[in-house]
Length: 186
Ligand code: AMP
Image (cartoon, rainbow, N blue to C red; front, top):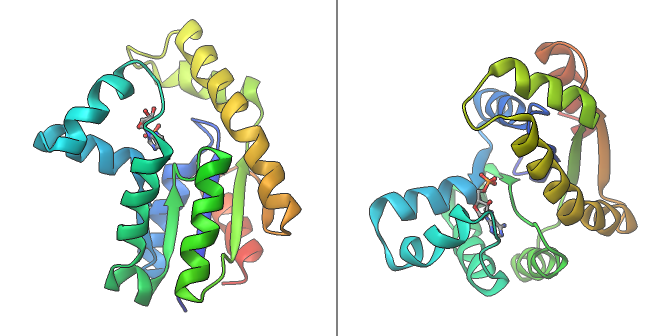
């Protein structure tokens, strides 16, 4: 089993938790483009130097750069053998097209794009409750509206290809994980 899964969901929807469960249970490789970029910034690589200001400003690193990074990562042996949970990519329709081309070149298919769905009011309440310094109501609203603007078209992109699976993200972690497993048939 080497599933290829895109994981979508608002900040605070429990995406990270569900990815960790899938990694622990099935050994699927978690590829988070945000984590990769943060590591590059921390290491001071040329990519990191380019990405740092963009990330600080809340912008998007260019499709060309992102598509190249992801194409390289998806060609590595662990992903080929164990499958991948793509988290944070694609974020634009150009990236979605690139992903389709990468998988096509590898002769494999995307299994599903799962959207862990939690309403805006609920994720706002969750983020306010965790009380992090950057979680002011205003900052949360800004990040969520960016997500809405960036991701809504992608939901349609995946739905149009018969790949979108919407998972109700309300409830206990175990309940949501059971829904994820059922949706993926694993
Ligand atoms: P994340 O942890 O997924 O929220 O990503 C943190 C930041 O990294 C984002 O705000 C973007 O600046 C950048 N980033 C991560 N993934 C991508 C992507 N697929 N395309 C463009 N920029 C990205």
